[in-house]
Amino acid sequence: MRDAGLTAFSQGAWAIDAGHFSELRRLAGAMARSDVAAVQRFVPDAPDPLAYPVENGVALISIIGVLQPRDSWLGRLLGGCALDGVQSALSAAAADSAVRSIVLEIDSPGGAVAGVQQVADLIARIRGDGKRVLAWADGMCASGAYWIASAAERILVADATTMMGSIGVVATHVDESQSEAQAGLKMTEITAGRYKAVASSHKPLSEDGRATLQARVDAIYKVFVDAVATGRRRPVAEVLERMADGRVFVGHDAIKAGLADGVARLDMVMNLARPPASGANFRGEQAAAAPVVTCGAELLTTWKRCLAVRGYRLDDLTPEQGRAAMQCLLAINVDLHKEELSAGDKRALVGATEKAVRVLSALGVQASSQLLH
Image (cartoon, rainbow, N blue to C red; front, side, top):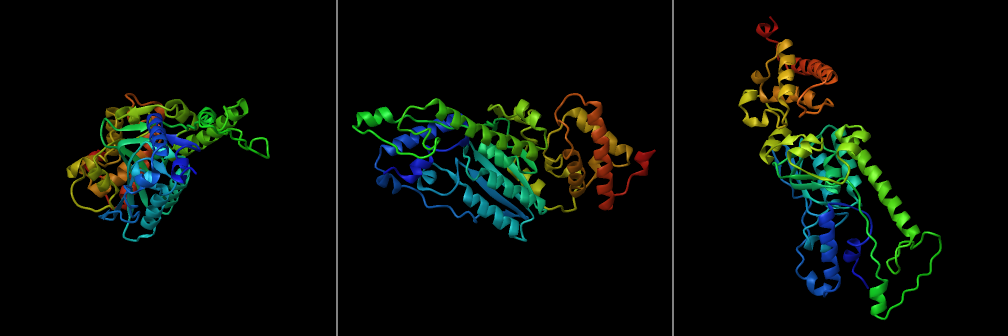
């Protein structure tokens, strides 16, 4: 009988980078031909999902490796990430009063679809309950891993080589009938219901089988795209046109496409997620100040001018005040990297400025009469 761990890697729909998917199938096939019991002796112990670090009120939860719905020996052997463990970690951090915000450390090509939407929905609920969740991608954040990241408040990439995207779904059909015949086996399936075993691996894929698999993949793809549109606060049409054609974007191209918000080191992201604390000058606290998000020159210049008109100089604010003001800018649906701003973009900046002024006033920041004259 085929091992359940191997079966999980050969069936169902996957939201994973295509190159990694081919390699996984090759490895799973090699495992199927090996002495499974002997291989299992080398499998590492399951990690403790609740052993995440907390620093200055910020929990760091790792999503590293190929995504699988639950722990399995094969997943551990291949360095996979069990999503039930991720859910446990997120739930624990959400319930922990010592945790004020969460950073997701992601390096994953994606994986099985099962469990991905549950994790993304949990992130949305945690944010709805008042805890911030930021995502930081180092290496790769593709397909199902990006689905999860898109539910976060902000997505930052580690450097210009970070790969991101691959928004799409893949399923495969393996025709095992010839290899079974060579082994002297002939499988006969007794079914009830037109579509039961319609894509059976014991026979060549029929047109009905192909259509069934395609419909399944299309349905999951729609859910995926809708989730990204909701998380990134972009119209579905824009996601389909700019992000969701299966491409993998690299570094700044991911930012320009709207998949990510900026470039930052992990320590900068942890600092950005940290609960506000008054103190040093906004300009003087490591470029976490410029709150990690890289903006086009015209956008940043216009934003500073808008604030100055209302009596506030961005560079004079404390880290707490600066983060609060910049969050108003980041909340608007404006491409942060475009060379020229449209009239609509400028109106959005004015609205963001009004909100920032209200936020700064609530923090006790007084407008400068020198700037007002």
